[in-house]
Length: 449
Image 1: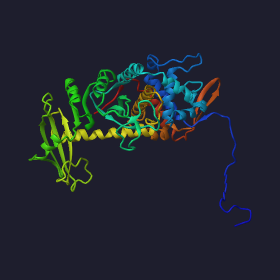
Image 2: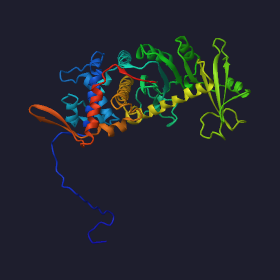
Image 3: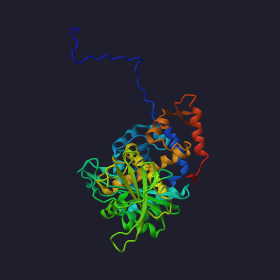
Image 4: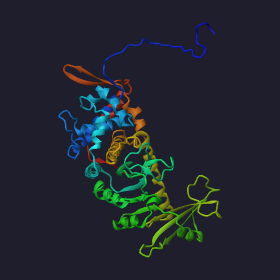
């Protein structure tokens, strides 16, 4: 060791290029000009202006439409907390792309969402979702109802101890979400306290989804997991003449009937199916068509299902109730595609900050929660119509794929121009996306064939 050199720390600093600083306003998200063009095409700004959004009390207050759009902009560029949205306040070029002088601060969002109440949320969001889906021609859709758990680190209003498989005993919220399977969009969403059951308030949530958010859209099928297996929910769907496939809970009376079953039909090697009409113990409840799928673990080691009987350790079972008159294997296959809900929830949490945008007030948190769902729907619409059905691309992929492009505003001959840092080979690709957006105004014809 040479004298004078610390034996614990040796740092070699190599700089290949000299470093200089510039005041030139440059944005790392010049590609967000694509989203600006797409938002203008949808007309959602104009519709937001018709809703009962909270107004500021100062002459210098931000327009509520700008606050909402800036909130979406923060999410799309990587913010997962309100404090992250402060990053964009220094981005003059991004503000200029969206036609604003500046972007709001964290405190602006907190004050804005803090003015939402249960009544305002009920007035704003079903109407916003209804307008959104009126811009899309979808035909008959499949609606998947699901719930998820959002763990909270503090004692925010509505956070309570309930079912939390990942962090047992921690406070949480337990939101309810309705997905449209074919378009990978959110039809409706409610935030609920963490100690509510999966089926709590579900009938009213379905009513709002069908009659308001999806008014004018034909619902061809409803799917849900066993948390929604109640006579109240099934009867509500039957009163609407809505087809459904819902996972059934393995209650003891169902297990007793399954245990003695014979003459199973083989759907494929290692998988057998059987149907029967189950009459609940409650005489007022009607008998319904139930289906059980039995999977042999030794032949299908990856097959999901529950172990119902200790003396049959080689078998896993899945139970369903339905009012569809289709072959058993089709019922099972149709339900299995519902697993995509988990991918959508994962994307909402990882890329859209669904589990991190939280305020002390419950209705304020729900307002940001439901605006996040609209931000998600806009991205789904964008990747389908602007990017030629790149439905599998997540927001993180889109961010690096087409949003993270250096840009700055240049002025020449009294005209402001957005300059994008793109190689010549990639410029035709960017031009093609702008042309695609311009050529496809609403209503968007969404093929779900």
